[in-house]
Length: 308
Image 1 (cartoon, rainbow, N blue to C red):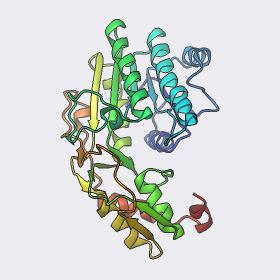
Image 2 (cartoon, rainbow, N blue to C red; image 1 turned 120 degrees about the vertical axis):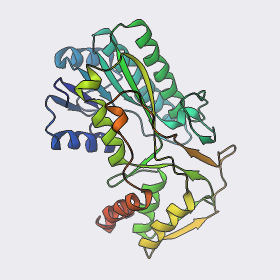
Image 3 (tube, rainbow, N blue to C red; image 1 turned 90 degrees about the vertical axis):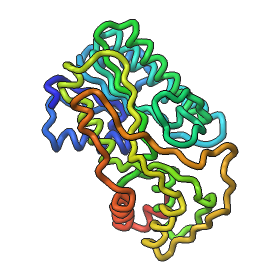
């Protein structure tokens, strides 16, 4: 396990908190976990000061905006807290000699490509989140070309879900509506997606900060597509959620699918030359993972669920 110091941004978010908790359970030394109140990643001066003080061996950059939908406020939030924050962290880390960056990208960088989403596909984002992440990736790749001794591991997970997740992503939105007995409208759900349980993503992140990767691994830019490789119909996911919440009122087919939405998006089989990361494989099947997620929601007070 990593003997250097690890700086985690976005530690106050859902994924960040799960990852930091896992590092704590594994007694990983030297973890500095910062949320938005501890580090504004878009503030160049603050980022430089924190990096100079902490002097991490690895920076795990998870911070980004969760804003979605139409409206200028979404554009502004994504620009500042996804692009500017990511660019600032990457460039400051490279300038200050941090040897290793692990950055969370997104399959939204690939837009509407359909089928198996291999690493050689060109970016074609259709969301601001995908666009800004794609641009940060270009910055990170550029920095590895001009900065000797820098390694960047850029991870693009498929649809991540799990206990504790809230928001408007498919699984938490469906669980929240089912638990509260609210009417929820969806598309027909015929599209198939690759659902990656949060425990599997955190397992990969934990391997990525191993000392053999962060210090002993090959330098340069490394792109990782993380998923199960199984395309699950969205309607099957919604059906399992509905079955567990007797009051669920899901209206499938009430919403149109967005133009050009691909019928299938799955990750390829994970193939990594790094001997440490090569040991990773998803271990949680979607039905079991969804069951765990639903059980978490069932344990939440109804007033809290209905307010979401």
